[in-house]
Length: 328
Image (tube, rainbow, N blue to C red):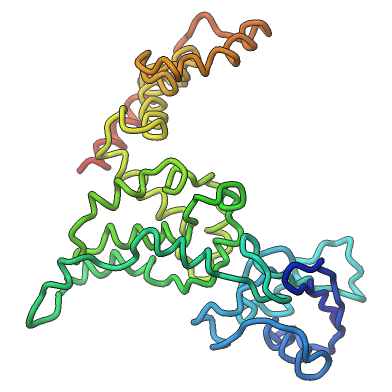
């Protein structure tokens, strides 16, 4: 069957443009095999990264039909099955472009310096405890090693980083790849400063609270590392050790649980004052609420009373049960 590959081409600092190449292919051909044929048989100037061809090295990350993926893992049949019904089935197209959130060097090759610099910020290596064993290995139990398996599967392909909405709008955010590695360091029995790591990852802009929870990192990860799940676990550990006064994000989550526990749902009269105003302690925070508060009052949307929801005792019981399990 004939398939047209529409590839976004670009040289550094020049306007990008699409160039189309039509190949006779088999549905089992991987996207990387098709790119190799285009380069070898049609246009030797086409530029992309590759190495292992077996979903191990992560080099061939790119966007395929708008989704960050590995070209060596995705095949023609899979991509054609995702094509919109409006597309001409007799002349199917597969659109390929470079990863997002990284500047393009040439064609499908991006500059990953920012990606690596963000990884370095979380110090992705075990600390001194593991380095001070003079005559033998630092042994781990099977249970301790098992905690590292999921995050240890990360091949740093950049797919999650490319899809990250938080990174797109906040350059200080370290990215899902780094924070997934961060959780591995917290759970590593050989590391001797998990408390200091949690303090570092508690940063509002660069740490876990910068995540928008869009779930795209989990969706595109080719190795099922589930970066969002790891970020959520770090948040849980931070919430367990930090008080309400430590930061606005921590207070936001603790107040939310407290209000739902008390009334079955959120009492909107109290929520912003308790979170942003830190229980009336933060004058600047309270003043920042004034413009919005006045608009809500003028629109007649401010609730002057609060009525607990039905089944509040059941809600409270569920929250208490969950909290008792997580605190064991």
